[in-house]
Image (cartoon, one colour):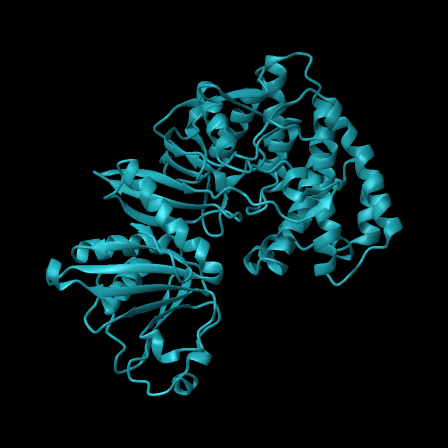
Length: 514
């Protein structure tokens, strides 16, 4: 592969046979998003339909489904799991104005569109698209092709990332690995499961985080909230957890600058089960035991990454905690159609400063920050606390141990019944008391309620932001649960003043849906 120097940004790759075309498809498929347009250019017989057919079958997870050429139907629609694909062929168009008559204007919103012969729609294509141009190379053989992959507009970075991931896999010995995208989180990271020689691995694709707009004292939100800017924290914390007998994935290959890791695969057995998912008690108990063990140790704030390179965990300071609760006033309340007056906002922050002081004055430990069911895998072949696999902790901080306990027991994506929450919280405090007779259980519960309310406020804001800014409405379905958790946490007597503020200013909390 080598850079394309004109017309967008991308690369060129030689395709010696159909197997190489399939590998190119696997390079492209993991970075596809709903609403993308992929144009397929090239002469008759150059490989456009072959590529489209391979991609549709890959996305369907079914190598046998019929994917006919749309040369005569002009447009074929496929309803695949989680994605609609429209496969079009413009070869028979005589003018670009005929495009609307074919029904492309009526294509489902957020469909992935694969469009052959895009030159027939010259001047009508959107700026943001990925073009794959196939050319024959008869001097190299009848099956030999060249493909130029070019990203235009917002797709330019995507094309560069496709090429960079391929170089990383080649250099790491995974050139021939089968790739399948797996469900990720709400961040810009993406994940793939790699299969090679009968074994499974995880590819983490985590581009360095760009700075957002400055919002306070010249800093973006990510800097104030201490969100990881690259994969260095993940590498450091994974090693630290493994050294303490916990099941974080081993980092097998890394390109820290590019933000690419190949990791041990901890499987896909969750700590929840059923439909809708519900906590499996044994597994949640083991997860609580993980936290009790970790919080009972003296943990360093500096961790080694590589020879000559260490990573210092930032502190979960007041600025970070407050910028998170402000998500509720900045995003959640506007989603409800309301705005908050400056005096009420100042009162809100003053109440939070007072409530959070107890969390900041206590002894600090590692806060993994997203210690909840989507990030916990069940490993029954291991024993004790090692049965819980930990997969998402790059945003870890030094903070109060109650934060991760609240993350688990008030899981935003799973209903944790109140009696189960109480039993598991009691299990945690008993374990801490058994290891340290000076452990202040009552003080811990107070901070637990405070940080549970802080986290619920943050999550309501994040889910609202995902819907309004990032066009990800699927997170809204979790809001009734998070509101119920918030009200549950605010019933602690120490939070009476905060509870009164929420009741007065957040109408949705006056009657919480169960």
